[in-house]
Length: 175
Image (cartoon, rainbow, N blue to C red; front, side, top):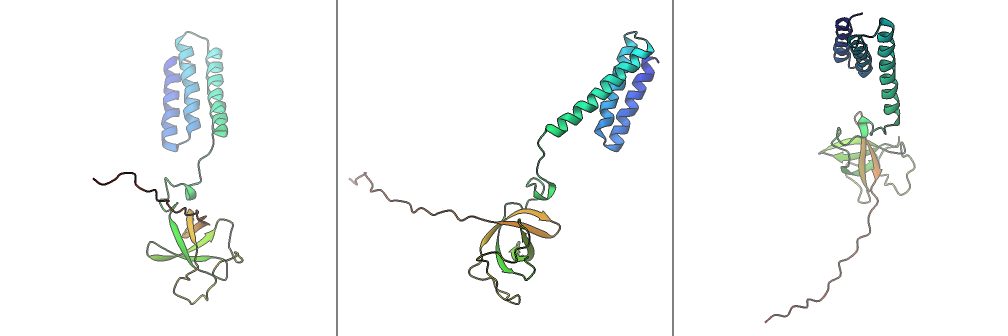
């Protein structure tokens, strides 16, 4: 095959990658470009095919290894770059019988679920009657860690010990 045919095939692979979003087609396009370079260097047709196959397969295999070794980011539902609600603190108004919590967030009631799953028996969790419209005074503060559909996934905020500031006598004297 001549170099022009190889370059056209490589271009077609790049266009197909752009239309489908399959990154592996781009790697195969690199292999086809290697076949074009081999043709331009005057290699015979078997050498062109071998160079295209070795470079294309090597690029696909290398990309696959790189993707498996690379640490994955958080899932979309827990990615703070995507879901801006992550990290917000909410107060549990009441626990429902099914273990879901009702929290007030952004001026509206939301259903929330603890990270560990429905919390039917959370120790020290306030369980006022379901019909109680007001939050209990013992409600705890929770942090949003994910949003799954229209439910907030929450975890308790561990209260930090408040250390009172010590006052030191001023060493400056007034004139």
